[in-house]
Length: 379
Image 1 (tube, one colour):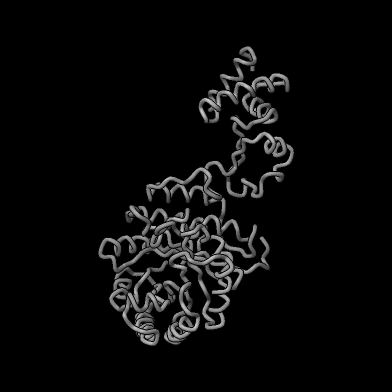
Image 2: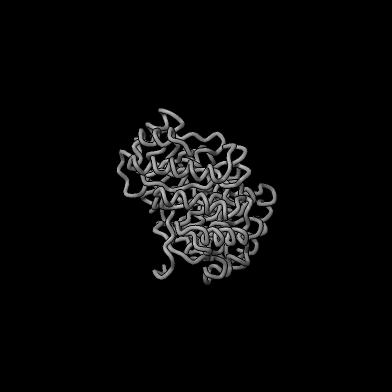
């Protein structure tokens, strides 16, 4: 990876925002296991939970803190002193103190104006800093806020000792173009490093995060497999692989750990990872089309933009309705059968007929029996 590319910090919130997905609840044991796996994968920061939820959450957070993980571990707080106290009880060294940024949410949720929010920010951030916590300022609904209002609030936060700003596209209302513009405007209002937190309501969280990075955001807030509220968040695995591949930037993520990490989180969340899920899906390196496979067998770069070996994975060829002679011959070789082109062409008709009837590729055992019968029992 190009060392001249900007360093992007990966801040994972699977254990906080990811757990807010419907019907997801991690045990303390789950949180510790996932936190360990996140560190092994190279994340820079773990947002471990919301202490204000109560004693069980505080104990789960304390269990993660006890691991003494070599990354920043933070907790999420609302803009009030009691949430800061709960974070202190949980033993976290770092907090994300979140406040609404849009006038809509400020009015509905807090019933005050922007100037009053700025004063509350100054007071709560100062209190947290006095108690020894480092503080990041979270901006809920930043994507619907006036950048000038954001500037007023962030100047108060910075003066009180906050060191970073999280720009949250809370409702997933941005597209990559407006995300780029929004971060560009906010950068004119503050010198604080910017973290982008994107939601995937219309399927643009990854694209918006990359656009924000292009505009100058240095931190990406993500979750494993995009787990999160409603349609979820920007997936860790997509951002990590995109950086240095299709987008300018570099991270410390070990992409060969992402597949196992995704399975761990999916199991704890009782979710299935879609077979076609980008980067970590079971079928993303599986090929059936005869035209594709024939070219892939000569040079994998023809129909493969990512080397699966980088992800600790490999190509798979399946025989089904769209398969061709080259794929069938290769499958035969893998199973120890030498099949000439004429026999392969004849066998394809049977495979396609079976695929139309069953609509599924043949298993390895079925293929071995199929080839054995076709070759008269010899292999």
